[in-house]
Length: 561
Image 1: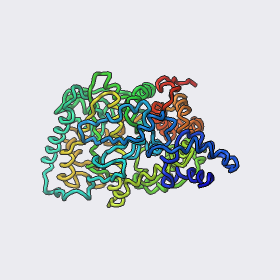
Image 2: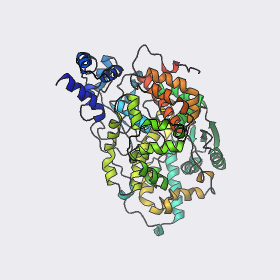
Image 3: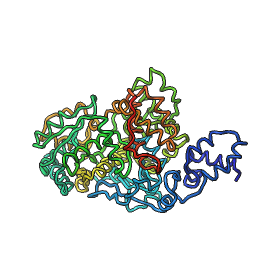
Image 4: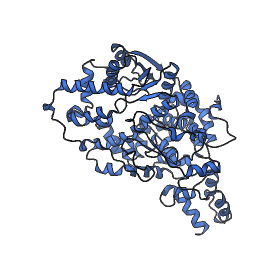
């Protein structure tokens, strides 16, 4: 193969992801590769070819994507031979992260496509992880599979796969509510049996209220804690009312973006993997608070949506119709009329999305922006990871079934943020809704109209259970908790995150430029959300990049503008 042909092949491979194995050709230093590919004189390229071969196209062990500047040669070679697999199912007693011990010291190659996943969707598409040679088995994956060898995703708890459920007129509502209470209490008791001082992450929503009722019976020593993330969402009054009526102690933590971000930076060296969930900073803030008050475990009310079902409402249908996979020029977002309007920015961003990915929450980087951050067409590689779920998506018989698959994919990340934060703080973690007996009873023995009722009312049985204890609560009118003050973070910590961007420019050469170009737009939550993703991702990457001359991430001081 000629030098010109080889260079063209490598130049195309990142966007193709199938043309050339990335592990065969793409190694750091990335900045040298980028500058080389931007020169379009083949006379110069011909002279440069020898240097490209020496610096860029060194072949390493399979699975070693762009890692030579991150790892010393011995560690690089040793880790390339390893294939680590972690079972992240919340249905087990405890996740074993011990196979990842030592990786926080930069002993493992990072997966660049996973970084693109984070920026595009806030999470890494399972079964992949932020590390090239670490795969995870979450919901929908059988952990007995080899997650490194094209594992099969198949979620067994789709309504179409359920055995015939009883008819509504063949069951007694009171008996259903009593069974619900008994099984949930048993699940909460099992999940917290090893905790001496449990703290319950309580919102004002249905799932939290239902869980609080059960927790009050089996663990009355539990302390409830609710987070106030900003002016838009305040569930403290509802949550406090529930806790106090049930006889539980209640605490509230008001978001302080500086405190929360400092706590995140302090914890991230001990976080085994990475997710950029929009409640990740809130969770670390809360977990640190629990630890400071001598709590030893966290109760989390996630997990019920997976088997209760997820009705698709008109807003979601409209957004799915708007998702058209378009590539819009980013200059559209630079006009004052658009850049200062969150609804307009959100609508335009939706036009650029895949329909399935629009189900994922929040405002994230578009494909064009991600390619700009990396300096090459990596978004295509990230999109190809959706292929893992296509068999189930093709078999889905309704929009609710598609929505449920999206929830399974993204909720793995929602659950993982708690796993990573609790591991960093040495806290136990319980998901009582993720209990085999409780799930199987709900899925197989509760009538359909007690799962999703007329006009898309969800969790009908859970609502009936709550109604036995409470009248209408504020969460029915407005809900949303454990979010974060995105605009406040951007305002207070811009210079610090910009410093992280400069120090990780070997991975994301476009990040500093993006931050500077959007600095005056960060009062719009659409852009502040993207700033948040960089604020989460960059320091974690920096802490894992091998560089003996770089100071620890926690030693980097904020520059005051």
